[in-house]
Image (cartoon, rainbow, N blue to C red; front, top):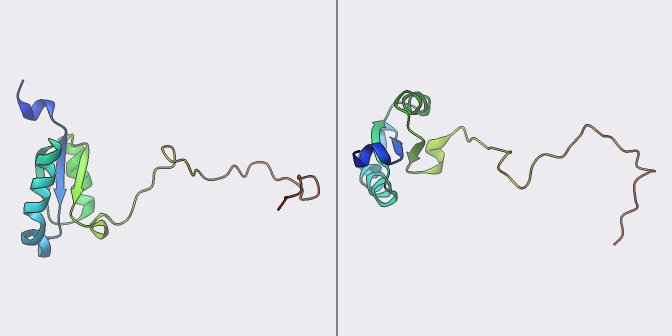
Amino acid sequence: MSAAATAIAAIIYIPKAELSLYLGACLAYCAARGYFVAGTVTDSMEDARRDAQHLGAAVIVVARRDHALPRVEVIAESHDQAPDTSRKEDARRRRPRRI
């Protein structure tokens, strides 16, 4: 089995105007983590997501946080999940807050 078959596949997304600035850093990042670079996308994040799904890539690598917009938040893996609003307690029945 080849190293590419056992490595985690990654797609690199860099906006076309910034490709020359960040491609080397993104490739070095992938190499340091042992990712197999399945492709590089410069058109849009939507294209990167589509290519990642099509190519079976588990990771999309971006050079800057603003390249990954819109941001995706996963609450199932978060410790600060949204509160359960299915029960509405009457303020008079709640325990008083103590300072």
